[in-house]
Image (cartoon, rainbow, N blue to C red):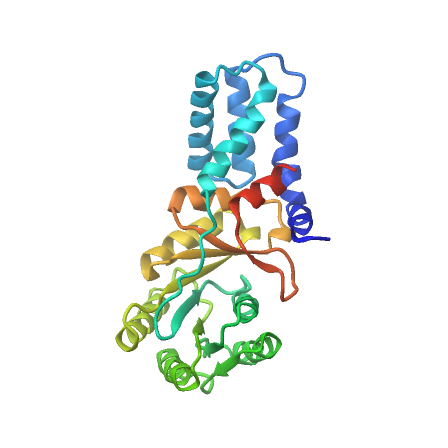
Length: 302
């Protein structure tokens, strides 16, 4: 099965709770009325698009329906598809490519698949011919360092680590020095799975950012926030808090294959104006892929 087929399959739960409900809503209706719009808004909210985004999409749909003089309810679905495509952006958002080396800081709460994502990202970068170093900045959880080393082995990347409990900023500093000495192109920094309600841990992230920028002006060049799609609207709340603390430049949405809440992609894109750069659709090392809005929408509505 090709990637599009796998993406379509991974969105099957979301499609059932979203697109199929829309089909059921418009099926057999003879006209577009207020109750249809209200029920459509409810479907969007239930798909974890978010209340504000759902309201705005329906308002834009009303406007588009009037402008194009659409009277048949069956005409709403392609219009909605067009609007969602617009929300998600017209072009894929590539990773930043600059610096000596390029530094990617990866953040997120416990349990979202952050370390696993880093391993898959390293593999993706290695396929592009880049030399990659992983910085084991999660020094608070012993298993995190071991897990990162396993993924580094699979991806063909190097690891810079310190002992458990060491200063994460010191690990990051040493990783930058190692990257220059070894001629590495990219440093990907793992961080502790920080609960977004803990201010002291957020301050630690800011400290890492300061160390990076002092040693490598412009770094980090990317701050990727890993979110678990199965958490729905809670993922949106996490994105807001991390965005304020670390200046998130892109979202990695994991576990799309195990949830009916894939609509959160739309909510995040609309509410935060932060691009979704990667999506995870499985457990394999090749299952982290750059996010393509057109591909996503086609797979969702397929």
